[in-house]
Image (cartoon, rainbow, N blue to C red; front, top):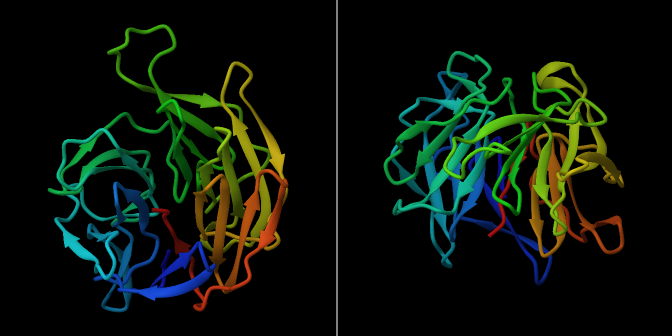
Length: 294
């Protein structure tokens, strides 16, 4: 799980529940997208510090899963700098390094984006896909078990949810489209999300609707996508969080950090409650974190 204010990277050993420092990012950044791609972790875009100002970067790098491996720089994004996007790995890929979908974010001019880009990590080539129904900055997004993509919240997106998939009555080869789903119970900016072991899409945390410096909350909910699509509350986290690391692991949800918070916790679906992990993060982040599970 990579800190978003520096180049440090920390890994949680699930056997010992201890945090360990591993090789750092090549380029320090914040507001980056991060996801597991095959047996590697990809870190895409974000803001890098340039002449005392943060600017959106097109930088891409990956960390192979083999022991002792270091981050390696890959070709930059052909679509230019982007930050605050959500990243989802595309498994069906002929690319040597894999492919990633980037959803939403802001560009180098700080314009909110509704774009969806399919990124070939080996070449950096970005291929536009169907746009989101609205601009979303730092949304929660995930791939459902049936392959459809769900995207929720984020600045501008507020409490709305949409899903990308084939038309309901269309031909099998028809183009996928975005469809609006029922709204969540509250506005969720700078939230995180993942798919639970039962197929529900969990959306965690947020900040108040005050832009980039809003206060975090602990609220969580789960979206069930079926014939009666609906959201239902999950137990709140022990600590309010925004811009934190989140990953689904072994039927559980692990969360760690947020701005000025080092705590880490796990949601046990069987017990139906959050349990605090025995060891906090060694590092305090001042802006937020991103994370991925291998």
